[in-house]
Length: 423
Image (cartoon, rainbow, N blue to C red; front, side, top):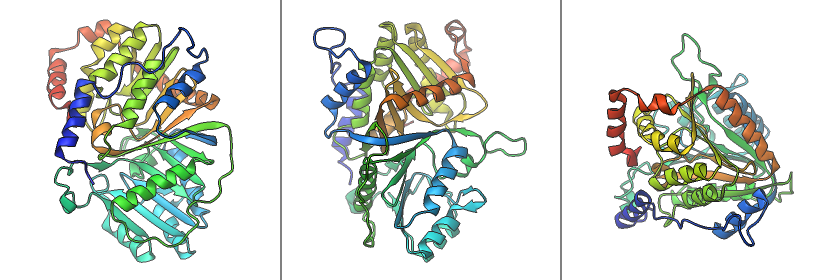
């Protein structure tokens, strides 16, 4: 249930004015401040999080649909107990010659419980025949915000379940920016196909923290009044699988504080060596812009990989309106070419990575159900390598050229800034 019109307005005003978080969390470079980059970020996490992070996990990066879909299908095809899916876009995608519907129906016939949450708007184009087939086979489903005016929720028709979450047998979790959408089936652009190739990222997670992902799913299921579920081993004993420390941040429109937004600002503030940020929608708040600029001015290498094309040209224009100040501060900006960038991850000092469904915009903090993983450890270097690959397929924005851009582009940016809160 939403938090009410007044409460939502206060959160919006807080973000617009940059007052949702303090400017300082750890003192850097003086006194008893940690000298190790990893320990700095551990200290930030300890100070802000309401619950401790979870040790003993393995996190594998999946670069795009060509990697994520086979991994997801492989896990689902071997499910023995349960499959839980929560997706903004939920469609009958294909991988390895099989459709998602084929896999789920097969598992249902073998006694596996299949539970699905999908967003009413994000899955608006999903064929009814696909949904009906799953329902007839015994899948239990919830449509998020199907009736935004039910139960007195008159303030929340704009809320979305923007998460991308799959949990198999309570032991394997998938999350990130990749939807169950046909656009991810195309690996590269093809001449006769007008579907864009989408550059996106997901992660496969095993270890004790998967229980937190399972809890996220069931919390939404309960809040959306999902039907009763069968008895299953929803929370099996999970042994450590590696040495990654992971913290799951699940945000929703009813939260009294946008935790991921606050967390990310503090992590940016604590950065000492580098910030690498990739996002499909870059519509930063004033405070986000300030933290990025301050970091660059104090000598941190700040690199942004952003889209050059999108399903929202207004979002691109609003983001570009912030380029000038950032470039002047020393921030390096790159726009991905020949692909639609949709990934969402931030890497700080080579030891801290946030990856999930949250974009660098207000909508992710105010209106959406989002899901992000904060990863601490040496394997974050895999994310840096992925980021460098994205830079290789991008064009760097030059400050002098940017200053001389056409007046028409400037007008588009100005117009987009008027509506950027809703982008």
